Image (cartoon, rainbow, N blue to C red; front, top):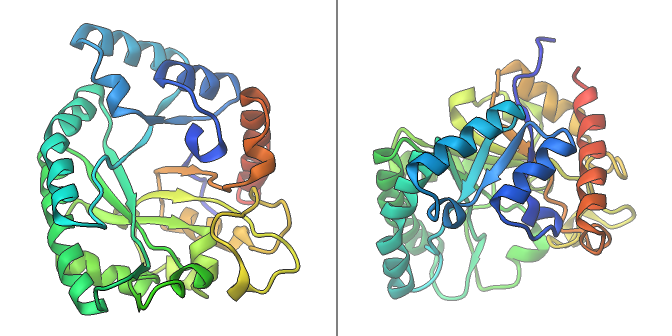
Length: 287
């Protein structure tokens, strides 16, 4: 196996840690994370010289940027989408000034009123607008499909929830900076394998999530908001997933996103320590 190029990322909100940008960087450094989520809102408050100092501090601590979350809700009504689009150019400029190169969001696998085709047309058009702004500011744009069956069955109409369908959506968007956010949870719930990951290249993947699933619950009954840290149960075999990422030379961030109540109830430092330990054990599978 070649050596891994991907990085261990800290995204505090994913583990119930509510802190600002500077504290997130401090926690990432202290607990050995290699990359950290970027907060456009916090970074917007910094001048160019302050951003330069912050980037110098990060370099001295060997912490780089992971990704930033998309500040636009494209899943609901047109008015809400347009309001978000008004703020996106400035947020994208801020991220570019800070040296951030990756932007990510998720796709809802269901809709109350739009059929699959109607949703596909609306979503691809909106995401094309977002991707254009992102591209203008040097940002790659990642889309996370949601494979959880118990979630997508809650509404009348289902939508994109597999890697194959997301490939079709990305092709329809037609922008070179658009790619995947891969999550072991959704990869597993979508009944995909390492061979599916091997159909992608490094350039196809913007970010990744690493999670496990609770024991003794059938896959189709698993709940999206109740997951486990990597290797906690072994229900999701993360080794072939990580091996595939190594083989294709994926060099982006990987975070844990367990939506786990026990973890969320921990003190910030304890939660970061638990996540770092789980991530290191998972990464050791392909060391």
